[in-house]
Image (tube, rainbow, N blue to C red; front, side):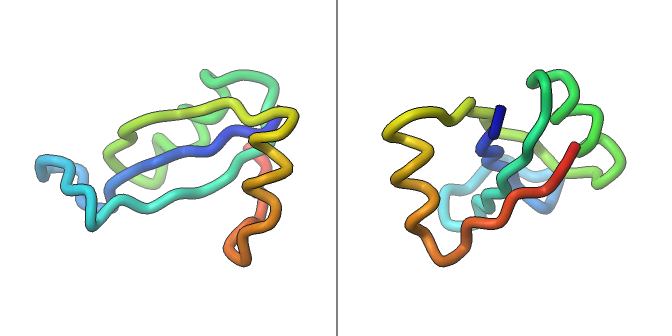
Length: 69
């Protein structure tokens, strides 16, 4: 499954919408995605599973690249 992760690059700061970054991960579970991001020391805001029409919409983005967890 592919997950969209919204996160802040500065882990000790309150989340600010303008600084939110997103990345896409292919993994078996949300837990696996969290483990992969733990080493990057980021502040995870939200992890959203993508499928169907939502995944098709996200694929249209020029920034759509999938990483493996």
